[in-house]
Structures are given as structure tokens and as C-alpha cells.
Image (tube, rainbow, N blue to C red; front, side):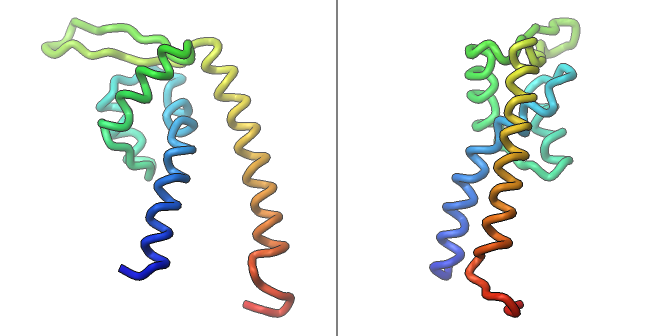
Amino acid sequence: MSDAKEHIDKLMQELRRGTITIGVLSQLSEPHYGYSLVTTLDDKGVHVEPGTLYPLLRRLEKQGLLESKWDTNEARPRKYYLLSETGKEVFDLLCEEWKSIVTSLDHLIDDGGGKKDGDN
């Protein structure tokens, strides 16, 4: 593996770790159980391992951002997660922050990026 590839893999892991919460919160305006959330995110191009997702869901619930409810009507009981009122507010604020960060980074990349005028 090249040095650049090794660096990218590590940096992408850090970047994903920092953004996965927004991705998860974005899907919980409607109830989801863990596996359905893994599948939904994966279908939308965001791969999350169950071993990463379940601790995150428990942490977000403990922080009051999610509410949960067990459904025992199926053969296999499932715990459904949904944004709490606080979770909705936090998600909206995170989205504003995210957009601000993206705009700032776009400017940095466009203005700096290691290229000079006329470079491709």
C-alpha cells in the first residue's frame, strides 16, 4: 500500500467518525430499529457497521437526543429509535454548522489547495 493510500485511509476513518452522528440523526425523524437504520444508511451510500451504530444509538439516547420504544408484536422484539424534541433541535443546529463548515472548507480548497492560478 502506498504511503498516500495509508494516510487517506486513516484520515477518512477520522472524518467518517466525526460525521456519522449527523447521518444517523438525519434518518430518525421516523422510527427505525438498528438493522433497518444500517440498511437505510447503506442504501444511501453511508456504510455503518452495526458494532459502530448500536453504541452510538445508546449514547445518543442517554444524551436525550433519541427516544426509544420496544415493539414486541413481531416474532423478534425490536427497539425503535426516534429523534426527541431536543434531538430535532440539535440536528437542525448540526446541519447549520455542517453547511457552514462545508462553505468554509470549499473556500479554503478553492483559494489555496496547493494550486496557483492557471494550474489544472
